[in-house]
Length: 571
Image 1 (cartoon, helix red, strand yellow):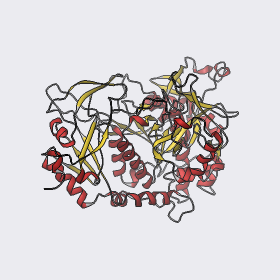
Image 2 (tube, rainbow, N blue to C red):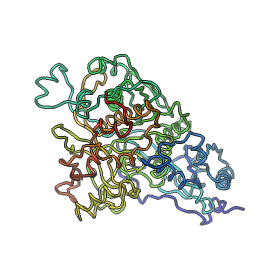
Image 3 (cartoon, rainbow, N blue to C red):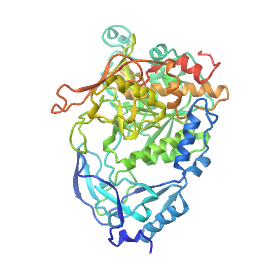
Image 4 (tube, one colour):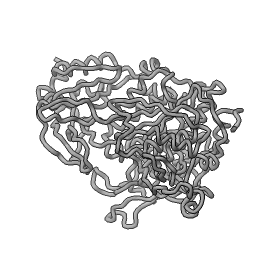
């Protein structure tokens, strides 16, 4: 008998993988689960070559290294992520001995056990929980364990203790523009609206790429869908030379493409319109990912709500090179502390794998400065709150600026230091310099050895967007991320035009080319609304060099182009 039988027999041979001391803030237990209710679980397996893969990605992403730009095919990557034969055998044996059907895909196992099976298997107590913000109930547990005999072969099992879900990074409607013809006249005296033309002028973008062989994409969640009609209106007003360019939609995990939905579609339209506004005519793909798993009928026909990141990222990583986007933008996130550490590390590892495939992944940094309430869920004390996945070191995090003469940090731009991820070597000098400037300021409220974010910034206020036929002004780092993604898409197109590989994982290259970015030295990202701890709030200030509001700064496209694709003209 192998050690893993101990758990099923009730023997204390189990290792607690994750536990919560309380139901997470904003959630409540709704009802008990039936023994026959089912839940769809993802099991991530450890891979012996994990350290070698990380080193390989750093080498292929570091300018000057002999392996720079040598990205992997899907087949090559799978060889790095394959689990050990013994580990795979032990884990699948544990599951099958519990009577559970197993679906294996390299380093992933998917199962759909009943609650009765899952409780016995994981020493868990699954129940139905509801968010105070509404939405479908979720089957979750406050802790789970796996047998000691297989624990080293398992990275995580989720969604078990994973309660949260991605949230839109602001993209608040600042105003409905009732009379668009006044935007360049009377209204401009009060507010300076952002358009594709103003972005290209501000960032000195003159390059027009070929439409062939390059792809830029954005991710949509929460039942938001970019609209064809709105894009056509946007093109007619702002991009007459590109009227007729459309976008493709790929539906993942039950994601839809509902062009008649009454749900908000502003975030998806913002992403779509400003990626195109900066990078046209490069083809654009929207990945519409559903957050609801398949309907599993029970007595009262309940459904469990799944986390979309795992479905989305594992889908992308299976794509052949020809179908994989070179640039990917996402404008969703949540507090890092709301995410189980095993889950956060696993998802971040998947972003690293996209970097191995040559994909540049950009995320908005968030819209709450150093945090919203700034209360730790560990001891209920004061602590700044980094965002997830914005604080993952394998993505490029984008903060926000406003104004143009000069650009300044916008007050909502999020940043800070990861709780889960240590500071990587490629940003050590830049972040250490910032920490030396602030001394002990706020030192009790953040992890000074953590990965600092954001990495860069772009405009984030008053973007003119068409949504459901109306022209409106949107603000948020959710505007900054697609803007910078459009810049990166242009750089990747320029590299392709001279026979070079795409940039892939950007950060070592960015921190090696700080002269190609405009350093933002004024403004601050403000937050922390809990008056008990922060009666005057709290703020990260923009300063010379890297800072946790605007990162290294905003793009100087001509300089970035010269660094990425020497000899390609900015026209």
